Length: 614
Ligand code: ARG
Image (cartoon, rainbow, N blue to C red; front, top):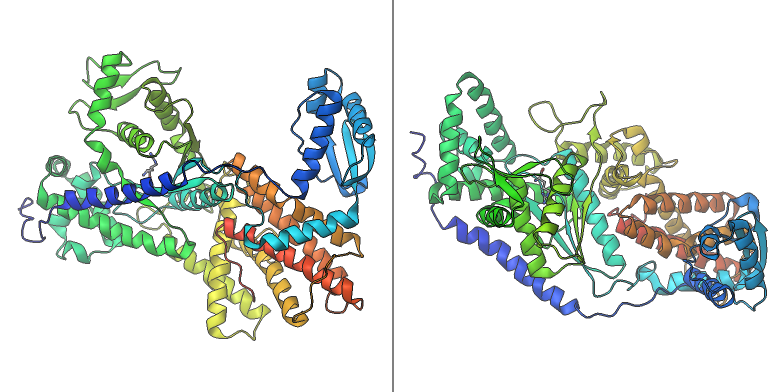
């Protein structure tokens, strides 16, 4: 009875269909990558880069050392515009940092400088006061002229980054860990693109493993519906049911193993069922991806790599990197780069996770020659990736200049402080989570702005709700665990996506009141807070670069939060619509254009939508 599956499904050639989907995507991406190969990187431009380069050049010419000229915004009590720390220079000059700072201050002071008006010393710091009027006008001109490109650069044009993210295990709803991977990977993709990289986005589905033998058994035994008509919840329930029944009757495991073996040997009936389970899963995930605004260039899977895993196991044996375990017969890698030993292939020659990853990595390198491969996967798999990367290096699968990174992240914790789960009954589904976020956002928006139409309100609630989930993920270092605390996630007073979105919507409502006023040729300012805002804007491109270099989007989140705070201070202090002086008024209009452009560009990188009304 359990092998009588033939009548329920069409036995079209599932393998061809599976491989063709992936092959087509890879071919398309190869073309795209070829088209961008050879693109020339361009140096960063912009006010801050120019100020820094000028200082670095002066230091180079008068002191003979090359330093990275990164400057920071000093705390407000310092009374300067930019601060440079002389620690690095001190090291290079063989002097203590305070002495080096003094030398640098003298060198910079001895020259004419386009931006710097005044220099002061504070221990190891050289503080610069800028020619504020000129700098102000330039910052605002740049930000508004560059528009949607403001903050982006071509610094890494011609380089390729393959970013793997999401990668859920099919036939069950996506977990919260996969949600984190999805958000993080999509945003890293945006950051790499903003820096000029050609980015390949890949979703590597967990579509292979003995669990499919269990699912096939459960389907045949307990399910009456056509496979194609099942929902992903129903697939999960079948799998759960299998485990319940197998506890009472362990022989089910043998049946499942047998079915899996038949699936693996290419049985067309089981194979086409499996393919249908996979397709059902992909369309269920698609709804979530759509709400998050996330997409992929390639949707691949582990099953594709399974058949070739044996080749690498054989290669390892040949090279003496692994050995066959005398008792279990499995192929084991021992003493590799000081890592704990691990199994590379089971005795029955079936592949395992890391073996499939090795095959996948090898074909990624062959297909795309990427400069970077990023794996966005939770911290539970840290050891796995260290082993994978070490193995790839000794086997020469990954050349030295291909940088492999495990983009690790913390857990999602539930109320009790333990890992929150979407498995087995009781857990939350991502869809419910998103709906709940939107519902809560809608309630707040209803109170804040009762005049909105129902349709407008629903749309804004979705943007704010989804934004709150994304922000919760990206507001702090990715290595930290996160929780769902709705109060703070939807706190319009700060520390949330809503806070940034609200600041931006406020600016748009000022634009509406201002109507079309002629732009100031040479923007001027009257209040300190206006210059502070411009200076913050000047740091936007640098912040993107920093977030990209460290694979840490939270640097951008924190930046946007700070910029919004500055804007709100401005908003409390200055009435733009009420400004009498027409030149100052149109200067302020440009300042707000620049702030809003920066917020919107930043939010876009973070996958957060920016409604103009809230
Ligand atoms: N599907 C895996 C899981 O859910 C994640 C895949 C991560 N990527 C990889 N190349 N191993 O655990």
